[in-house]
Length: 457
Ligand code: SF4
Image 1 (cartoon, helix red, strand yellow):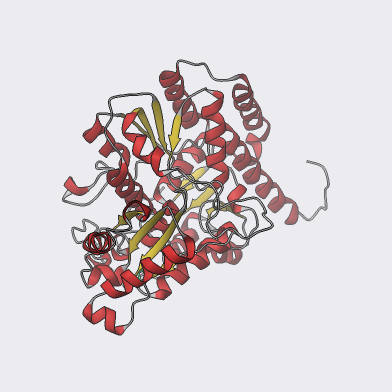
Image 2 (image 1 turned 90 degrees about the horizontal axis):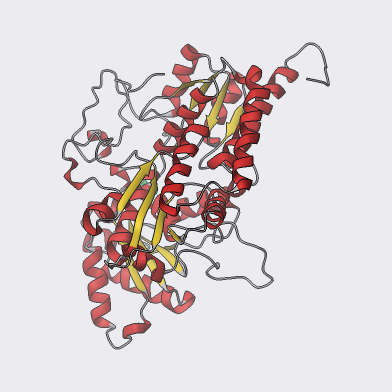
């Protein structure tokens, strides 16, 4: 496994990405070529889609919102309305307050949303747009409408400071900071699942209900981005965490937060004082115990997650889930001969890649990933590492195609397959699905490349 790459500058702490404080040496930097990372307001929009009655507004150029819509629609195969304040040359020079007001008025008129989630862009951040000020002024000017105004949430998401994954985490933090209220009644668990699939979110809800745990899960886009067919078009799809539930997050007795890539200890920023996850903020501000853990992919990490659920609920693992675990162990035994000793090239969101790497080791696969690399670097390193398969999103397909090896599609975005929103990744169930997909990809590859057209394993 290679960690760190001296010639790479796609790391988000690099001066080339805008925040300064790089600790990554560079010896032969040319430019980022085919970046593995997507844009920060995309992550913000995903979080906003997980709030009930919310319409995301991208405060910046129209192209940013179009790009985000295109990516999300292609992955989730659902209508994704994302508004834009549509900056022009004039707003770039004189500021975007007028566009902001027009945008908010149009959203309220057309959608009647409960919430408007506002994410900034590279442009609006660069010219120093004061979005909290715009929101304040808008409320002042519409004070007569009072309670009828939607709730406003603002996340600062300049893409030159971070990826879609950071945009996601920063927006979860911004939402919790802006809405959560401190209460002394401690009766719920808060789950902050990170950037998982709608199917993963539904699985978590089922698991928590089987443990008989009262919970708030945020963000919940399990319906908004994977909804049932309705005869009438829904301007705002049903589902999502309610504002009321997010406010009540302050009364949680514990938080379970998946992913640790953006916490203080992981961050490579020199000044770590501003680095905090939502779970860490709830712990430091509201004294809510935060169980921060990797995404539960694999038996080891899922066991750890289950131990926490047992601790907070006082309930043993329900029988149906115990059996899922048992079937997974059985599958590991049955298929170890197909996966053991194989090599996997991993890429994608940080939390996902680190969890996948641990899982690969659990099943006897050698993982390979490069922190902060672009796809061209991965392609070059693949020549040295000689992977047997790729584990990542659709954007790495050209590497798999060139090498004529399988790509097992996981994470975001998946543009060239159907059903990404129904893919499981986490828990015993998700691991089982992943394991089956990896094993079958390897078997299929062997079969396709065999001189004998065999039909039995
Ligand atoms: S990277 Fe910046 S300019 Fe490009 S779409 Fe994202 S916010 Fe807009």
